Length: 247
Image 1 (cartoon, rainbow, N blue to C red):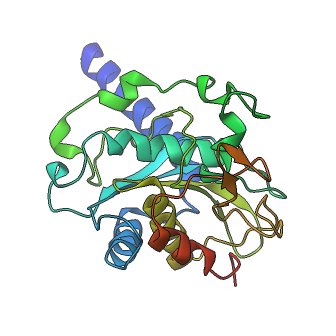
Image 2 (cartoon, rainbow, N blue to C red):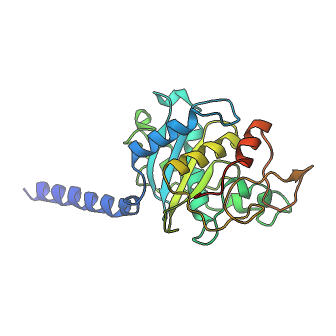
């Protein structure tokens, strides 16, 4: 009898802990909403290879709220991009503030040797236990094992964006991975727009208006210090013609 009571108490405690951990996810899109937005964005021309994608959302504490994919099964997109999408979400959230958004694309040049943030990519390592725990059959579903975990990790190429609501509150981050890094950025940008979480106040792009990818690298030098390599002219043209975030 005592053993049964202890077991029931443990289950209740775990449930309360889980609910508390995921409280920050309440103001963020759920699995179904994220899946729909990602699928819509992925189907458009994005300057990449038209590959299937992973997407992850984290809350402001870096806790994973949702993980999804566009293919019918986990092997339909690069398996390694699941964790990369989570890394990107964590990075954009971890290095953005209410008054300054940094996309993962913005960090590329700054983290190269001689850059102003060189070494950043070695900080905040990935939580490998969370990243690779099973069961694998649940990857990309509503029961993905990453949910409720702090994934950590720093990624410094396109595909990660901070999430801001209509009043400018920073709620967390989204990471998208599975194609070229430039296409990843474009898909993330479109997905965030569809989720209505792109109300960015300020960024490091040339007009300092948002966190769009910056293409200003000549040779190996970024004029602004926040540049990203061009993956394809098509991807660049798409990003160059994005309206200001939130408009």
